[in-house]
Image 1 (cartoon, rainbow, N blue to C red):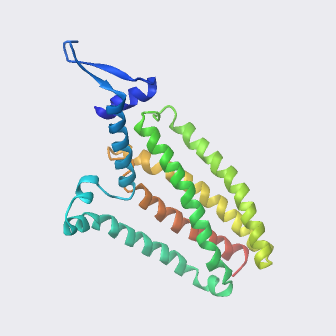
Image 2 (spheres, helix red, strand yellow):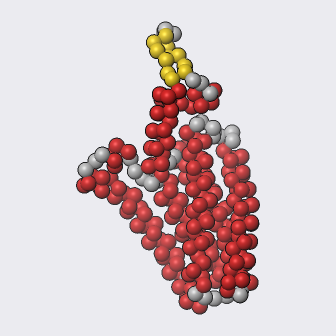
Image 3 (cartoon, rainbow, N blue to C red):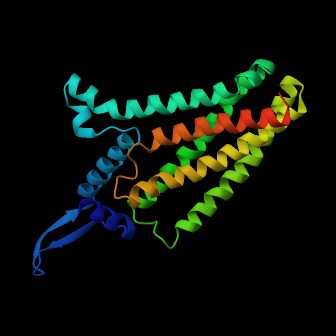
Length: 235
């Protein structure tokens, strides 16, 4: 397969390689520029797949067909956005009592989305290069958890302190810091789990991963932040 050849060229830093038939007879050769074309095309397809697009049917199709091809993921996105809005609706009373919650909760969701997208990108690349299997998947999960905890502790503390200074409420700052840590950990787990799960099901690991990740980090981030605020701040 072209993708397999590209992995071999990358792994062994090849410039060219012989091509033989089933009888071991030389029938040609592959060069690095040919393999690079395949690698670039594959990377571009993965980028499109993350947002639910297919290169052939979406790039050159007519308007009606292209629009129709995007309906399934738009429907999924609308459903997940509605669920996220309902999570916020559950905590309307809390938001009314502390208006600052409405201003701060997008930050929690956004930082989670960034963390998750980084984990998704690393996992998709690892799967594409056959660098991830049953032997090292556990290590990858633990490593990404460690990274998310470290980053969450650092940047959660920064945002917690900024929230305290901005609103003069130390407990609100504590809630902000804790919510960022928890949502970044959740994002890392989902960012790894979505591509691995799709791959295990025989699907393209990149297909729709960004859409699914956004749903989890948004809905999860809102629930974690507003839930902690309701408990800790007793609103």
